[in-house]
Image 1 (cartoon, rainbow, N blue to C red):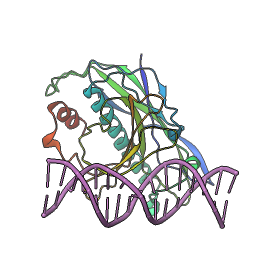
Image 2 (cartoon, rainbow, N blue to C red; image 1 turned 90 degrees about the horizontal axis):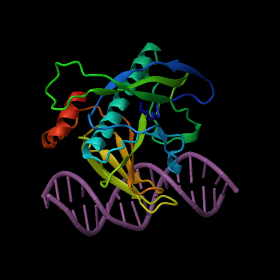
Image 3 (cartoon, protein in one colour; image 1 turned 60 degrees about the vertical axis):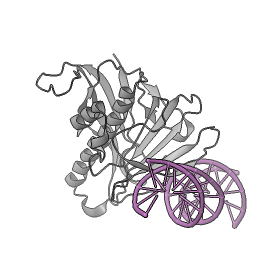
Length: 244
DNA sequence: CGATTTTGACCTGCGC
DNA sequence: GCGCAGGTCAAAATCG
């Protein structure tokens, strides 16, 4: 059975006083047919230390789209979960976002998932695909801090074998920077969601060890639906609508 | 002509 | 404090 690991650079912590609280957060994501996930694979790219990645084994656009959708969904679910947490613990307006922070001093949450064979319970036949597999994502561990609380926007990264750098995930992005990173031949590109008031960012780069692999990192959560649904291909549309 | 990309400057954190 | 590395800004260039 395949397993995959999505990495969730989740909300944080508190440097001084934090205690770890095991949390449960589960959700299932329809799994496209003809696509399998390879064994858990850790990403050792230096700039992504401590981050695991999901690695679709297929090179198909469907797989790439799925990967993006999966991650986006994970981000959303995680955020919802976090929001719930926040209100539950009476955080009030104590949350703030940090654009810059020392990555290493943060405690990353983790979301792990496993493939579970499961037949889609009929009914939903608007999809010509029959999602007979689902990716179950559950068991999140995170650290909660007491007192002043800082929360970093949820971040996810994954790598995909793809010829195109920017995978179409249904959202519109505007490039705002490009940087050559040390020890790599391929530059890293920075994108921001074009939607007003949406601060979601996305980083795309190629893995130095294997240029065929594209590493996509999302940061933040969209507070809106994909804006270009009308232009999406049918497959994407179906996938997207299913998720959102 | 508005939207997006390009690209060097600028900013900030971190290690020495 | 200094310099490096990564992230962002923004003016100019380019695109559609």
